[in-house]
Image 1 (tube, rainbow, N blue to C red):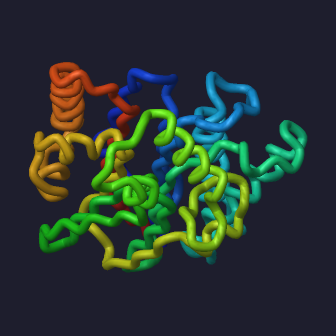
Image 2: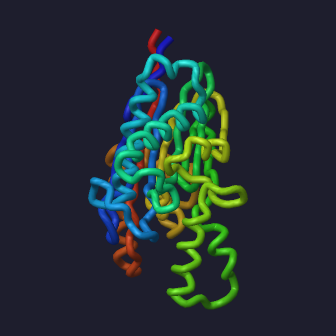
Length: 268
């Protein structure tokens, strides 16, 4: 039995501050979304418009190769993500040597159809919305990327420079015990991935945090309403257009936003 995906809606909108650093895709039993973290450390000048864009594109390619590889058939979501990160590590070696701390990082969620179940492996703050056969919608989120940094200065005023320094230090500590686990180049980071297993869904949406901003700003009230509105190409596009209009109205710098909605198919 072969498991694969059918596209319901796929919409991307580039943000205001940098080139597109989101990526998404699907192949075989897998689908994924990647949100490259805005560069804060000294860049490595990887061959793309930005280092995070290079990682988002290279990791999407690596995940596609893993998804369609015959030898990956028995691998779970975590192992598939680790295999893709090993490919990134190999590609990065001739470009930047052993550099890790300054290497770009990303949030990623990988969903994998496994028999009558769906497995989700997530690092950082991409979201997966899963609608089951009964119409119930579940939201899957690993960890907000800046949660610890924001908590450190909660309740007091912080200068822009102090905030920037704290964010830089947070980047330097990623993929170390007690800190945020992200997709970078270390396959061992998947040990810190949030893993979820649910029954085979009716519909799945993968979102970058830039798209989830529609919920933060009150344009939609819940994960369920988000999936309702994004369940057609026209609806997903209208939602992102409404989000961009609202961000322009309030003077907010828009982040890249990606919505990928899929339906699982099975072929005997």
